[in-house]
Image (cartoon, rainbow, N blue to C red; front, side, top):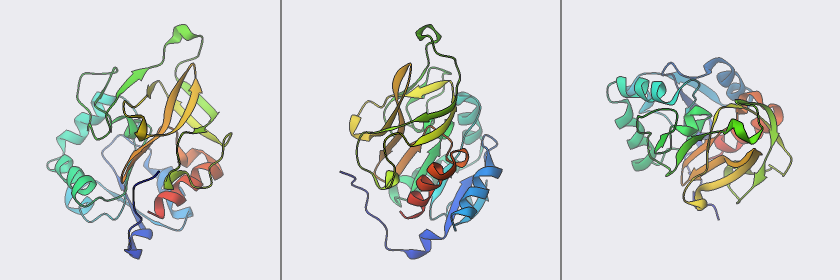
Length: 216
């Protein structure tokens, strides 16, 4: 059962803050957020992020480089922790942004945010698959979640990644996908969620996910 409770503050439905730290696909994400009727704010300053009603952490590139960029902005990690855990602000990590929620990655040596326990692992080429995993793939719902309302088996999402997550606590696994191995394509704990695919590139299926996030 999903334990996160929808907030009563109706203003939270109108605005989503995208964190711009130099490691994300900001333009297309902003466009699709505007398309679902929300206001997309792109912010890099912790003082502005501190005002956020909902937060999206996008991500492309390498794990260590992305964590380094987050660490280099004074007070940013402190603000993100306070928003996620003390204010319980709805938080969504996308692709590499989802991997940053974990304890760390085989891609590098820096620790992750460690908000959801697990290690990001690399796909094994020896299993006969092409790496990176690029293209459309379907999903399997592991448990009900506010984030996956209206999503059914065989809905397709667009992936582009060389590393994957299998969370340690299976109560934090929401959806999975098969690509050589079964990996977690959506994870969540309370108000914190991560999606491995790119909702901004996943047409109507990605729009469903972002609509659901906007309703938190």
